Image (cartoon, rainbow over all chains, first blue to last red; front, side, top):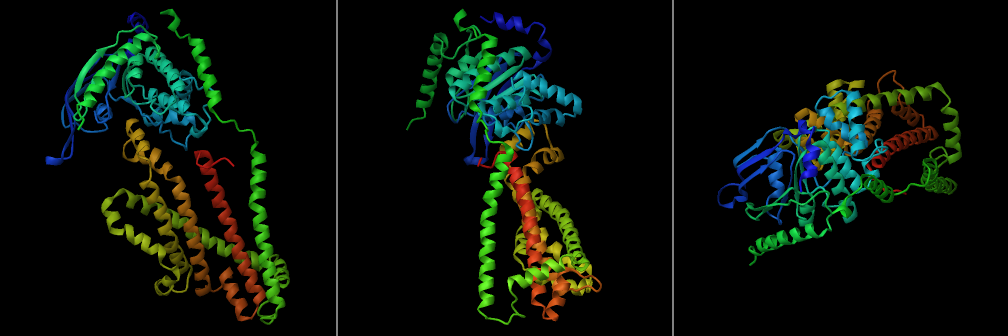
Length: 263
Length: 293
């Protein structure tokens, strides 16, 4: 089932060194009796070159978890180990800078790291080709559709040259057709570049469509309820029967968890 | 399941097909848009001007005031046309504009530094944040007695008041710009590894641009007002500025000349405002904030 993946890994191992290990991660907001525990003892191992989807209902702290892995927020307890740091990240909103062109938005990631002008340009155009936006380099973000903007954001994240890519509901605001296409594109790029992806979503089918493993989190506080090994052959289709079957199983578990908070 | 294999070529076609469908086609040329906008902006102004001149002429014909106190539009136009060709006129406009630009440039520097400092350091904001807004509402003419005591009748006295008039608006423009930087942009900066100065250089300052420009525009208006008040009050010997010549015209009971200067100042104000508006429009267009008209 994972044969295709193993094949593409051959010769691509240079960037596949990255992996993330979370051990008893705790995150609390506030102090004293009013404190809220967002994450309570989350342990998780993300294998190098794997695609992991974090799934959960509202309040499971999945976005918080990503922020912690990205180092945007401080841990209250536990540990997060990276083989390779820093990590790349993209969000639900593309958050492109309107004062820069598409190319400029990709180049900014390189510029911060001190990459020279000529090399920046070469690399940005190469990455725009990777996300199939050749010819849009000089457009402004507002001239693009939502799906195209997310691809620019992906190119910007890839320009960070990190082996780990964190994605916080990156396709949540897109229509179904665009989302399906971007799933294919993301899968292709993930395989080509040998990335380790940690992908947060609340869409069960999306998680099964993309993930090697799907991690189901409980809500308030967030704990790992179960880890599903997807084990379906790639490329997958979101509307295929095996994807739907596993998604149904996970949805049942998710509903049970949400129901626990009733009353 | 071979039926589910996604062919790379097909996927590429699908992506570019969807891209083509989702983008709004812009059919009109830039020049076509420019011309229609120019016309839409011009005819109301022409009409308004005609109404004002008509009312003025009517007032003149009613005999409400003697012609030497309230001249006709034609008499003022003749004075303006003849006087505008003289070196005195050009010299006066030059002196006044030089003062305005010097004062404004100094205000931009002081206002920007002050604005960034106040936005950046919490205690400083607590200390002088509301003071800046307070200063903004203070009529600048209030400063002249002090300015004259401090700097005597001099260019410095005028400059002092011009800068005091413009700095609060410019600083406030920057402060509110920084306050309203979308958190998503800051987060992207953090993810990309920007810290301190880099975050300001690449994210926060560019993000404040629209607010900065509107601060500049307001700052200019205050600088220009302060300057006109200053030139009427502080007449520096040998400097035939607009204000000085206008006071001179009043002393000679030359109403037409006074009105000539009023019209000149009005036109300069409108021209500068147009330049700011063009800058503002440009930002809104490239940022995608302007609705396509």
